[in-house]
Image (cartoon, rainbow, N blue to C red; front, side, top):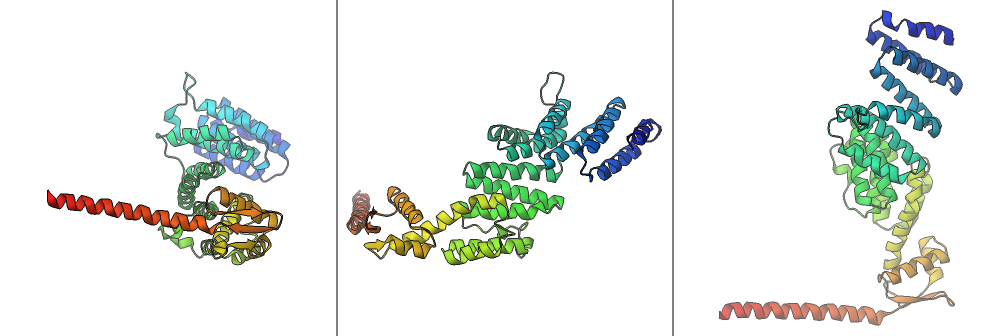
Length: 356
């Protein structure tokens, strides 16, 4: 088989460049369906060598990129790194600097390496590549490439807990994937909804013209129902939605990673409202209301007390939260006093203006 393919490659000089490119791409697309990586590698190596000799740089670049994506899909990052070095070198000028005239090709290389850095959690390199890719202005990339870069950028910002920046990147990724006709748009739309919840945003992602057509998509409906339960502090409904839509929500490792943050947020909101009428309340009662363990509620209460969101103390021996109502009343009267002083100052200023 390899012998026949070698003969086929040797005939490239006898046909037009477009015909040879279409033929080689068809063969490689067919071979790529094989699970035998040894055979795949032999086909690609033979193709790349023939293209190098024929000085067909354009197809050499595309073929190398295709091989790189194959290695990325199977998780062979060692071989992928070598391909990325070769690809990046082909996009440099004689001084070894990135050739901005090859901006479109540079972005394709950056996108593939950004995906690898995201998969291997190489955050430092990921940030460098992300910033470099956004700085490329001389390119007209395929929207799918920018979608990949923006999606990985959103995930990077999520890891740094920069929810606003993450939401912005996920929205850009969604628009690019939508333009490219890629199903990845649905996933990025879900990530946008997730980041909006984490930043406690009241903005409805589906108010935008681009997102509105996907509002009734089954996978998106699950996320919007989750948002509604989250915004209204309905813990039972929130957890029920997670259970009933496991395939569209919790089966995504990225979304699942941030569910603990969302559960903590919604429990915090409910907890503050729940303790408001009391001076003393049993922690076990709060745990039952929040569908959480006593230990989890204790930790939440300590955080809220330290953040000055609840005025009180936890009696760990008797498992009771004791709220300091006096300090709340004092803060209320202090606020009224400050308001009265400001009104008096304003009154004096007006009188002074009238006398002048």
